[in-house]
Image (cartoon, rainbow, N blue to C red; front, side, top):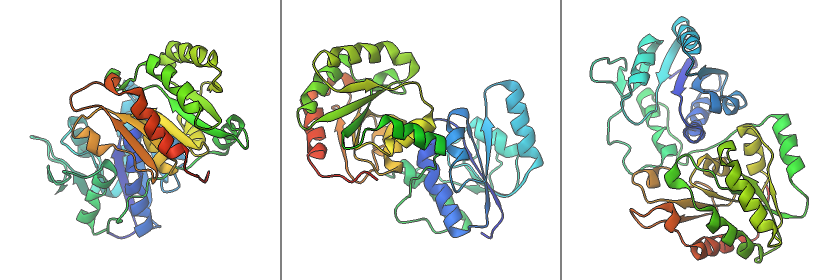
Length: 327
């Protein structure tokens, strides 16, 4: 590969985008002059715009008129390489790649349309973490994959300032996230209300509570319950994903169920305690990549609600008692 124009097609969940940043970094590390375009979803677009390796962001939106605009932008562009790192054949991926004009296209071909001339092999990624899987296309264009994937994000000055306002100096601060991407990944609010007072006794702690708008009732109930028990907790105001990323980069520890916040912690290498269900291969693909981390998982086939409070408290205590540098 020589310096040129490269496009990476990465719509979908924010967590998938975050774990694809090692691919962006590897391309730019190998060829800094390369112009990198990333096509992603609306939720991940703000992360893409501030990522130092990305030169152009195009947004895949569900609205038909926006889809048409995107496809026209892709069609009129010329790329040297088109990369779709998705780990399985996808109709949308194949259709969009069919419209793209590129000398080389990498991805999984469909049964009928086969726009990719450099194809990824199903099963090749078995046993790899998601952040390692996304590097597999590099070998097809002669770019050496890094030994350790580098997950990273860029931040806006506004998001940095917002995060600074949430932190009080000289306080051990823990971000608690109770929201999940699916119902099976929720841990009961009653368990959270039992956990937080217990772990607050390990060391003086200020908890910042994060939740999605649709979980506001759960968050309000939890806030009320633990404040009555004397826990220092504050529910965060509405914030963007970029704001939340900046905050994750400043807290002392992250406590969350399996969601994109686990991967935000990896981008800033913050200590994290993460709750998982043992759903394979998801359990292998999306485990935390922070240097200091603990995973508390349900038994195979059991729901998230079966995870005992004392196991989470034990994992938290192992990290909370260790000295940590806030980066």
